[in-house]
Amino acid sequence: MCAITGIVHFDHRPVAESELVTMRDVMVNRGPEHGGQWLGGHAALGHRRLRIIDLSPLGNQPMTNEDSTVWVTFNGEIYNFHALRKELEARGHQFRSHSDTEVIVHGFEEWGEGVVARMDGMFAIGIWDTRKDTLLIATDRFGKKPLYYSQHGATVRFASDSKAFWSLPGAALTVNHAAIDCYLHHLAVTTDHTIYNEVSKLPPAHFKVFERDAADGVRAREVRYWQPNFRDKINVTEAEALERIDAALKEGVRKRMIADVPLGAFLSGGVDSSLVVAMMSELSSKPVKTFSIGFEEQDFSELEYSDAVAKRYQTEHQQIRLKPDVLEILPSLVWEYGEPFADSSAIPTYYVSKAAKEFVTVALTGDGGDELFGGYDIARASFHAMRYDALMPGFVRGPLEDWLFAAERTGFAQKLKTLATHASPDPARRHGYSMAFNQHQREALYTDTFRASIGAHRPWHIYERHAAAMAELSILDQNLYHVLMARLSNDYLVKVDVASMKVALELRSPFLDTDLCALSSSLDPLLKVKGGVQKYLPKKLAERYLPWEVIYRPKKGFSLPLKHWLRTDLAPVLNRMLPDGNLVKAGWFKKTEIQRLITEHTNGAAQHTHRLWSLLWLELWHRIFIERSMTGRESLRA
Image (cartoon, rainbow, N blue to C red; front, side, top):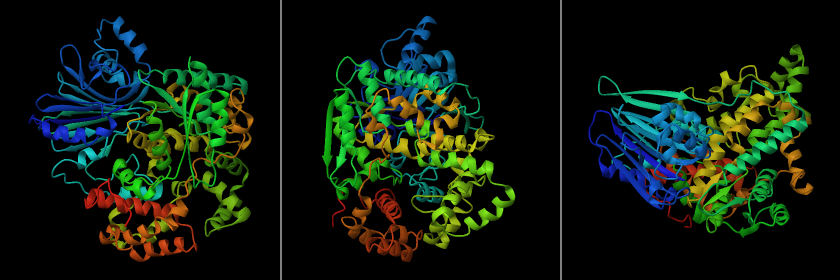
């Protein structure tokens, strides 16, 4: 696991070494063990290394081929690199190292752009071809590894972190107001935006090629090389599906256990991470190192369930109980994420990563199980919405939905409204719900000037970009596709990547295996959410491996006492920073609306947890990255 960066002046001006090093070393936490660089006149690549495969200097990057015509900087892991290496050796390529990076170098020599689709792994890559004067950047299928880039005049830059662009002397970056609109809806800045107008993200499953045009400018071509196939279904019984899932998941686990450094697993006590640990234990010749975390202030803890799994498989289990110091940790997390990010589960993810790093360098997780197999509430709601859509007559449905959406509803009417929401063909209606600020709440918050600056922007465009791929899919498959290809890359994978890389821990997700995803996408969605039961198939599979009480219990997840913090420890911070803070001074948000949210929450009149948390994070982000009056090393204590 590493950090990558690169600069190309397509007008053939030489790259300044100091600029490359500045971009590279602001990301040192991602690769603390080695800093490499290659300067090739008008092109340059940089790399920060966390050693995982081939720990020798031969694995250092940037890496090149025999005649130095192809240069690669790479972040991630290629799980099928052994098979690719054998194929390339059979074609006459000679290798100097045992690293997966060198497979990319020779693979590009052999297949050109085609090497990207051949790789099974998590990755962000930059490849400079000196023969053609072209730059290729690429991301993995699910977006596990971030990749930012900018194009200004004849210059292209790329990096693993938005801070690489921010760190440059004289960086003229302006705030993207549409990204803020997305952030307040989704709690994260989505792939279609970055927080800066001058910087972009390369979406998951894409590569982009830059080359010089005739006028000393830059010509770019972006290609999507993969997407899940939810159209072509296979006809299998439940028993056959379970056998295939068992084999595919076990193979995904096996591939992710390849490392030349200590390896373990997060064990939350949920079905997904417990299945991964069970399979690791079967595949390993020695006890698996497992890690669980609980907070003293939690209303609910899953530690008893993780303990049960650890005992069954006799793992070397580390259980950590702590009281997080949010006043100390929050500024450093805001710094680390670089862009506004208000998913509060970043806090426990960071703490369990920090604990695991004391024992291992790589850890497997259960991430992706919910997305592949319908583990969220939206899956159950979509199952029932399909029945509503099929059975509700049109002459009744129209007037009924007009009434349902005209106001807030309760009881049975609210349940009907939920079904109508998930069955709606209108993206604004189907995706208008937000844990933080919905459309009406954002409009109440924004000043007239800020509202005018975002124009007709709507945050659900992240779903609309997949409309063609979802045409003619069932309501259930549409929503499963949305979760997999939109929510996963825009929130959950960002959370995990940044929180773990803060402590230089590599996380791997067996559920996000290419073959397992292909299998899951090919299954009848009514089998995945059979009878409206969320994650039906993994639960049935888990009966072979796990105690009954671990499988069939209410899904809780990490329940942070965020609501309590905002009424106690963080209440003075809210009052000190928000009503007269930068978000108000910038003319973005109304002071009266912010004050109302604080007052109602702190006196218990209403619950504005996620709204206040997202505003506090955004205020801190503005002070650190725009005003530059704070750093990530400061405390929020007065």
